[in-house]
Image 1 (cartoon, rainbow, N blue to C red):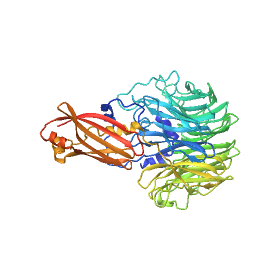
Image 2: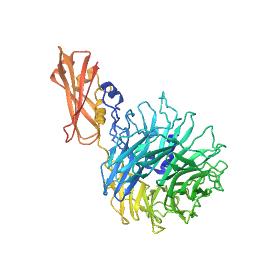
Image 3: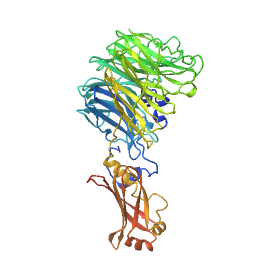
Image 4: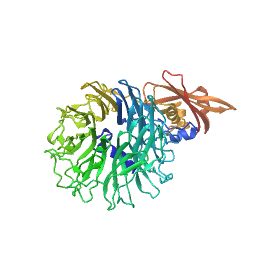
Length: 631
């Protein structure tokens, strides 16, 4: 269910994200045997960092932080943290999971990763998500940035009724997750998600930070009449506009077993749940209401958006309004005239993925819908004086495919600096059937034609790009994060800035440098020969041996074999390879004259092996040792 939190947070990902086409563990080197067992076999494929940037927050213009994930040089999924200071992005850093984390602590397939971030001041941010421990149990995690420096992640204290997880025999135990965080000031934040209690049902989770200290988690209250058996409550999004009040949105199961909107508000240890708003008039008797995004202009003045089902099980866009602390009945979004009807099973799917409320009664929401041709189209919905207007289709760039050419466009995010001045980000398909990042600005209350997001200079012609998220600190002053493919078909991250209404060039996000543990793991893979050629007869004939070595950074790798001869250890083979760029390299070992003589007439020999790596331009040398027997 915590995995549900992640899926819900990234509503559009299954529809169009690049991942659809598409550092090392926090433990010390202990024994050569354990390293060799953990290190992956080298492959002949090129390293692809598979970057996904998931969330962004800007405290002020030019001072932002972003989170995401990438695959390190050994193919392990890691979380990354990046910071912009005075308009310049620093190289991202690898998120350091709490002690006892798995080798791949942020593997998305296991529900891991960072999903949301809030920055109440420049260089002072909080990021939340989930990681996997070495015993295959998932845990919620919080990362804090202070003064521009990110610190090691910390676990959370769950409510007293949380189910103590037991390590599984297979797979990963899914028992908790965080999905959103908001802050009123540095050291005073609230995070939400879900956890499994001792009755083995899912409850909504609230975590409160007070003066820099995270308190024990709170089980979020549920409305009267909530189901006791089979509960599956979850909070997906939170918004805080005042020191004394926050509001969060998600869903829960009512007494009839139906999924309803969960809307809670409060601060500190005092939270209350609103009775679920009446479902839209065209909703199914089991409406499956799921608000996934909430925004508040002030305490008690909020809007939430998401989805609900009609009787034909079509997903439709959900609109919820709160005024003076009271939620009114839910409404469905009125779709543009070209929308496919929702009167036949499967004809229509609408998603409202994000909402922003810079001013009470003046919110904007974005998402996507299907037109009459079955194309995904980007949807814009505006609120005037507290009343939601009919949705409009965003105008795509001139190079977009249209008609029967199967467009796949949609918005994942909207950010508004002031009422009527917003930026929506997403994706669309161009005439070359490439996915491109989509940017649509609202200026003075008028939505402008969409433009294609610029990409870094090393972008490929064939593209699976997306503009994932934006944050606007002033009218025409916005920052965007996204993903794209370079000319080597690596999936990378990019940042983009708009100043005074003008877009600058996109920049590739610099990934974390390999750390010592990652280098040692890559070396461990060549401690023992790994294929059929490692036989005495083959080595004698070739007068050596060839390793496939997975290099994680530029530098020089060396390996040597030694054997005991008359009580003395003697060198019998050695070799090295100079690495210019990460990837699969061939390291050739040649027998020494002594090694050739020694191996000429033996049937078995015990070999001691040493492998080392010196990064280019560094005095640091990583070294590992092991033993094996040649037959």
